[in-house]
Length: 451
Image (cartoon, helix red, strand yellow):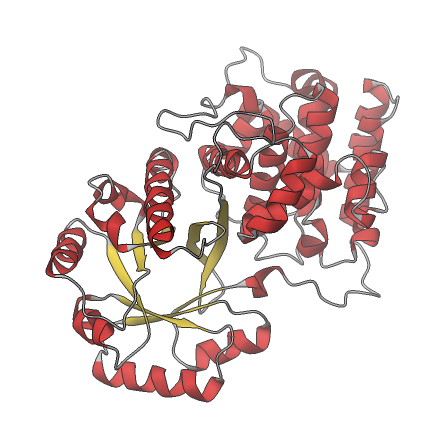
């Protein structure tokens, strides 16, 4: 964690440019498009988990409005698939080890020569095909070529259909889609596939709650994705840990008129936190000739803004959140995306929107009602209003970030209009934010323990 925390502490401005070569080129602002019928989509991103609950990859796709004209639909899908492939190429440099990437693509995209370049992402291509018809020979050849290049192929579990039967032997993963399906039908399919194709893994998608998660495991699904991973529970009656309350007190000192000596004195009252501050400052600023030997020196090196970010990460993690790393990554990606959306606003507003993004998952991280989770913090009014009542000047930014992550284009379009951005531009910012978070380093190491 030190590697990426060092970069996080030293500021986001030190990271690579957020618009890499080959990125989507769209206006930064303005709800009105330059063409009569602009291409719009929402970048959906979900975590994929193994049977032990470890995050092993992402499920990503660009979701559009699905026009009813089939010919137009095919053309739009081909354009969006090309955008997705080009954007993913920009993630290769900092892709986290042992994370895979599952991407849904139509048949035209399989001929894209850039697709094979995504092999370092450990890509699994989810073929979006009409399996009622046999595939063309050219499609089969593309599949053979991609598998030789190191990519895996996933197929909807629809045994008996001509397209499925023709491609099943060239498939690595069968997709069991839970939404709208009866469990007995899913079980019959899983049993049949396990008997006929024992070499293929099964993956469950659109799993909505813990009960469906257990059913997916009973079916033998090796990996699972769905909204179950970010469900809010009934956490009334839970209380914040004393360690978190101490961190919250320090955050409030940083946000008020307290002087550096006052902040240092508050830090010295917690020996563990004092040690951590000195250790991380000296690790992050190892170019200094003389390392920080006191808390006051550490504060001068970091500054309030960077110390606030570091303490915010400590506030996120606790002994009660052993699986918090994927949520921390999601929070950082969301915070960065919202900061990018606020590019034309004041520095103060951009920092507050970054804060809103990372704290928007605080209730999930701490397993507390949001009102309880933020009660010890003196958050700005705009941040609190967006978190508690979805109101105020920042609410539309949070709506835009969440709807993009979920792939809900219609909701994203409404929010995007309010903040004068195009949905496709927000999707690009989602890509950029993910690249930024991954450039920080491997988020999946053990989270910081407050002790």
